[in-house]
Length: 333
Length: 208
Image (cartoon, rainbow over all chains, first blue to last red; front, side, top):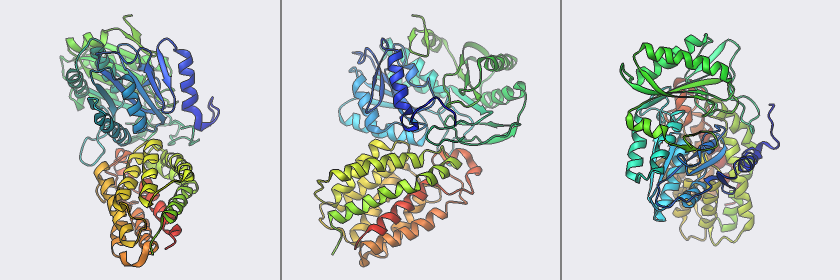
C-alpha cells in the first residue's frame, strides 16, 4: 500500500483538519464527534439538509456543505457509516427551527445509524425526515437483497433539495422533492482496478489486466459481473443501456447526465466517456439538458467510472441552476 | 449461585479482548463478501468498551451490559454498531435489576438480544447474517437453563459456531453481501462469525 498518510487509524481526522484549514470562510469542522457544518449554521427558518456516510467518497459529502446544498455532513471512518450520536449532534447543530431532512444512501449500516439518530432527534422534539437514495441499477431491488444502493444520484438529490431549502421550501416540500429526484434517477458504475482501504492495507478485490468489473459499489465491494475489458465505446454502451432500460428513460425525456470518476480515472478518459454517453443518449432521443463531469462520488483511488441519469423538468432545472457555494461545487455566486 | 456484577464484567471484558485476536480474520471474511471493515469496526468499539469497563462503578449486571451497548452504538458504525448495540441493550433490559445472573436469566437475555437484532435488522434465519448464529444459540440456551450460566453459554456458543458454519453455502439476502447475489455463496458470513466468537469468549469466561 502506497498512500500519503501517517497512521491508517487517523486518516479521517487528519483529512478533516486539512479541510478546515482549506475552507475557513465556508466550513466549521467539528471533531469528536466529527461533523462538517456550514460556517453560518444554523440558518434560522430554513430546513436543514444533512447527509453523511463513510469517508473515502470525497468530495461527497463534506465537499458539498455550504449555501445552496448541505447544512451538515457526518463523515464516518473510511467506508463505514457515522454513528447515531454523531448524526444527532450534527442535527442539533444545524437545526434552524424548520426541521431537518436526512439524505441517506441506502446501505444497511447507514440506514440503521441514521434511523437511530432520527429517533433520538425526534425525541428531542426536532422534526426529522429521512429520504433514502437508491439509484444503483446494478442491484436488484427485491425482497432478496438489501435493496438498490445509493451512489452518484446522491449528489443530485443534495444539490436540488439544498437549493429548495435555501429558497425557504418547507420540510414537506423538501421531502417530496427529494423523493421525486430519487424516483427519476438511475446510476451504474464500473471499475478497472479495486481500491485499498487504509486500515486494511490491501486491495478490496483483484482484477487482472484484461478484466473489468461492472456494477461495482462505492465501497470497494465487487460488482455483479466480471467481464473481459472492452474499449470505451463498449463500456459506456453497457452503462447507458442498463440505465436507460431500468427506469426506463424514453425518447423525448429531458435529462441531466453526470459522468463520474471513481477517483483514479483521469479527466481525459472521463471526457472521452462522457462524449460517447452524450452520443448514445442522443441516438435514443433523450435530450441531455444539464451535465456534470468529474470526480465527485469516488471510491478512494479506484480506477473506473459511473454514469448517472436524472429525468428533468423545468422546476428541477431551475433548482439545479440555483447558486451553490461549496468546496467542490460552485456556480451562480 | 449465579454470576455477580464482577463476573459479568469479567466475561464482557474477555469478549472485548478476544475481538483483538480475531480482528484480521473478520477483516478478511468481510473483504470477501463485504467491504472489509467488520474486524476494524468491532475492534475499535470493543477497545472503547474495555476503557469504559475500567471506569467501573456498575450497580448490577444489567448496567455492565447497558454501558457496553451505548459504547458500541457510539463507536462501531456500520451495521454492526446498531445491531450489537441493540443486542446488548435488550439483554440488559432482560436482566432487569437482578444482582446475580442464573442460567434462566442468561437464556432470557440471549433471547431478548435476538429479538432486538431481528427488530432492527429485519433479517430472518437463512439470510446469511448474524441471525443465523444467534437463532440456534438461543434455542440451545433455552434447553439448558437449569445447568448454570456457564453451561448455558457453552451450549449457545457451540450452536452459534454450527450456525455460523451453516452460512457458508447460503446466498446473502441482507446486508452488503446481498449485492453479490449468487457470488456470496461459498463464504462464511463475518457477522455470524463474530457472534460465535463473542459467545465463545463469554462462555469460557463465565465462572459459574
